[in-house]
Amino acid sequence: MIKTDILVIGSGAAGMSAAIKLSENFEVTLITKNSLIDSSTWYAQGGIAAVIDDNDTIEEHLRDTLIAGDGLCNETAVRECVSHGEEAINWLASLGTNFTQDKSSENFHLTQEGGHSKRRVVHAEDATGKEVSSSLSDIVRSISNIKILENHIVVDLITHENNCIGAYVLDIKANAVKAFTASSTILATGGASKVYLYTSNPDGSSGDGIGLAWRAGCIVENLEFNQFHPTCLFHPDAKSFLISEALRGEGAFLINRNGEKFMKKYDSRLELAPRDIVARSIDKEMKITGEDNVFLDISHKNPEEIKDEFPNILKQCKTFGFDLTREPIPVVPAAHYTCGGVKVDLNSHTNINNLYAIGEVSSTGLHGANRLASNSLLECVVFAKKASQHILENFKKNNYSVEEWDVSKVTETQEGVIIGHNWDEIRRLMWDYVGIVRSNNLLKRAELAMKHINQEVNYFYGKYLISSDLIELRNLALVANLTIKSALKRKESRGLHYSIDYPNLLKTAKPTILDPKKLKI
Ligand SMILES: Cc1cc2nc3c(=O)[nH]c(=O)nc-3n(C[C@H](O)[C@H](O)[C@H](O)COP(=O)(O)OP(=O)(O)OC[C@H]3O[C@@H](n4cnc5c(N)ncnc54)[C@H](O)[C@@H]3O)c2cc1C
Image (cartoon, rainbow, N blue to C red; front, side):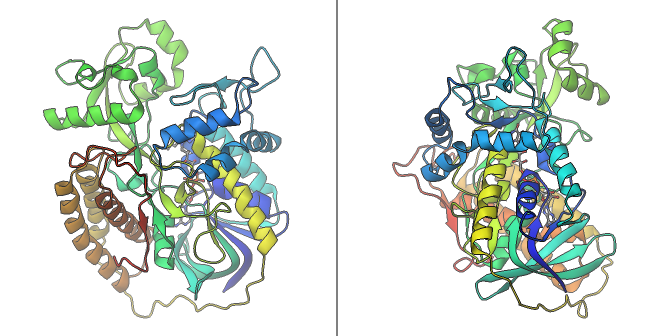
């Protein structure tokens, strides 16, 4: 049994920020299932929203966030988050994050993104996440109070009565499960977009934190709100490659396989309609034509301009055999962000004592029914600080001991094929039945299919030795189930949840709450 003051699970912007802050007062163990920088954070392109410009105000950032959230944001949480934007940016900069500077002033350069009424997106060229992740990981590695365990994946949290007292963790290389006790545990495990066949997220976004929290007794909320990015490159090896909406901003058309510009059928704003509308239109077009993708065409523009404006995208597309300057490229919408998650209060504390959730795994109330672009990295940093502060003010040493992991009743499997098969089946099922446009009929089919898959996964988990693939599959299956149940509960179309059976908005906006004490899966 390994004892630590604080267990931080996950090394994205949220987990590393919390580890750095907590290390000032505590001994922190930072557990991450791959390398420190392997996270969605690394892939973030656009930037971090913060009120910095003299012409901008907290009230305007608040209003833009509430509008995007379509009635479901918690206004207090939004205010708390947006009013700490500048502080969060300055803190990251003080740790060495090299944000792009404005050429004509001493300030950070600001861009404007969809849904923001002002220029307020601080960025590091077009690879903000890489810069944030690199600077945080350099600092984390330099702090002796942080014990870093890479290639370690949390299997389950350990609870006693209503307290979280630690976790079982699989050391992936040694293939052994270790028991940890901690006075406080922070889930910073990111989102669950890997539950869909197409996603902009890295492989690790398998919803582990939601699975861990649910099994520990945590309430989850708003899991039906999955944000889909309209355009990812469609190629078997380009699984995480996002084609920025800036291309559409510069005049790229969406066309179907017949070369028809189809957006005119769906929205008068054509390719510049909001993200969720463009994603829904592409989904509809793909369902009509039966094709696996549509195409994005910017080849009518001057090749020199394309080279100047999109060097990174041009280069990436070329590695997959597509030349943006000469031909349409195949694109598909992709699951991008999990707006709901583990329900937390304003200190990012869950309903289980000493258990916190921060970043994309959490539901703070900031995003409501739809996330405003570039608010998520901000949320990671702001709520990492709030959770750390709350831990500092309420710290009590945990003297519990926990039992070692028992492998006496399980054996090596000869049927590992079941794991890969179920992974694929869940992701295809979620894409086809619980995707961008939903119906009661398809959701019920998905619910039934997932019941069988879940039984199989649980049987497998109880009988055989665990592996990281099996741990992720178990969480993925649980999150798929919870997402379907949440989608079935919502009898309206709001924000990112669109149902053909309930196309209208109800007068009162209510969160979808699922409680493990009341719902057995
Ligand atoms: C392509 C792309 C572009 C984006 N662009 C932007 C943007 O411009 N601005 C913005 O604000 N947001 C953007 N986002 C969203 C943003 O990047 C994420 O919401 C944010 O980085 C999430 O940070 P996090 O710390 O919560 O989780 P992550 O960064 O995903 O980190 C999760 C960590 O948890 C670890 N982990 C998970 N499960 C376990 C387990 N069981 N055991 C141990 N470790 C575990 C993972 O390995 C990882 O280290 C983008 C996302 C993507 C994918």
